[in-house]
Image (cartoon, rainbow, N blue to C red):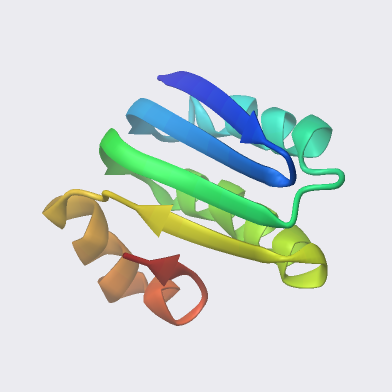
Length: 98
């Protein structure tokens, strides 16, 4: 998995390339721990994320909890398989997925 961050003022876009799974989720969680201060708009660009496991969902949920207090979080460009996982797990009720 590769994480690419782009910040424009208080907006942070985090692009995920590859699988967000048990092995890679801790890396994303560490990124969130260090980069969300002062961010009011977090965008997760999932265009190149081809799989997400429960560990990946947990990482996104942690970020969503932080962003609920300081702004908003949106997941964009998710492929159909990833959207299906969000739907099946009920994460579409927690996250804004467009």
